[in-house]
Length: 376
Image 1 (cartoon, rainbow, N blue to C red):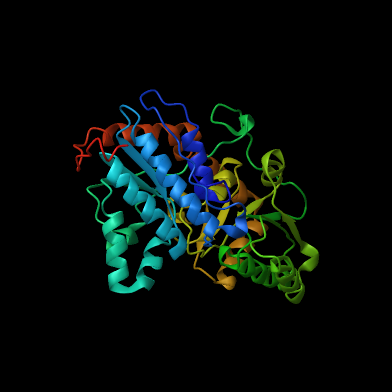
Image 2: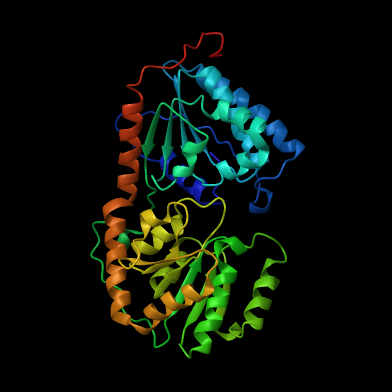
């Protein structure tokens, strides 16, 4: 399990700490990076860590009755792909059944850059898995390269505070102030939509529409804060924008609950089903995002929010304008977002869906026979 620097790691943590009636999990932490900036970069230290992980896999495979491997995968570049290929190959050698859980949408893009031979080489390793878990049928690009025996679908679920749980008495969104607040919450890459949102803010200001913007998330590089602040200054909305950095726990939830609109116009290559959108839905916020990866599984355009084309500041400004001008529309879409969360994305549904999938997977006839020598 990688460290919780991003959505995939958080989802892994949620699954590994769940309580299950019919599953016994032996968890191996596959963390290779010590901080956010280190993710996806090679080092000798990581190579040694990879060797240690292979030894740990052999140890777990020798545990009596432990004959099935669940591998959580999702890489943004070739370095991550090599790590996943090495560990998945080790799983295939040691376990009778192997199931892969894909958390990102960038794998096919990375493999396409390798060309035919590289794509085939990686494809053979990844296709050795008996089954795959995808977050959504929207991730259909997967089938261009991979052809597993079975594909399951499991949408993400999130932990929420007790007052936002399915049993809590929840009140719909109310106007928080005379100036509506738009919140962005994710790592502050340009491809997450930060720059496009600031550009849309300029259009809103030119139209005389009052708003505030809060950007919450980690800075991916040292110069990123100055870049974004300079952009807000050039676009003339520096006074309306607040760059808050990362926020966690109660502070994060308080920011969401005191906002009026959640906006993340992402086109990030590794995007899949953003947890931050699900968290905003749990808080009853209308969502404005993009037609990208599995996001249409979370947001139905015109129902619980709006979907816009990627990198389209004009359309983004139009949709934000509709919500900023119409409190009743924000309330209606916020209620629908909250209901979508309750119907599909609670932590209980996530755990139950995972156990249901794994129980079914364990009924499959193993595709390989593993000798005792390979299990130790």
